[in-house]
Length: 141
Image (cartoon, rainbow, N blue to C red; front, side, top):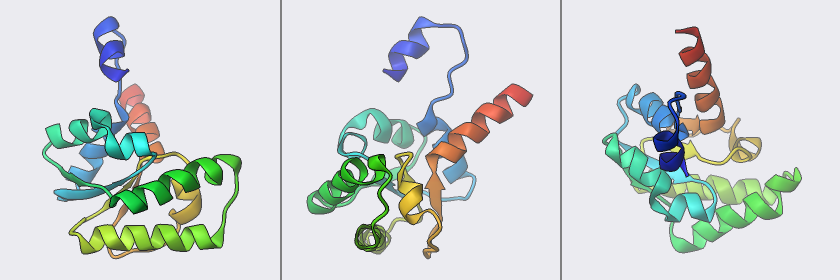
């Protein structure tokens, strides 16, 4: 609904994908992995915003997208942190890195609870923190 909001108001609107793209590009990253709900990974509303900024977006394969989505809704949204699920997410991130991802977007608020503290060979981008920082920067500018 972002475009509807942007076209319906004069109030400044900070799109989470735009703020995320700015942060990613500031680190000279061009190819980014995207994790989130099935809607975020499979529909264009998020990916297109990133691609419009010049990023190449890759997502997990169909099986791994289902794993990521199901863990979000069946565990993380309920506050459940499961070590087996953490291992599955680590494997998904490693698969994205093997596919050329230079970084990985944690495109759902809850994902950082599961893997946000894990160190990978590429940076993780927590969209919740990035979006909040962009809002603060805007207000203070």
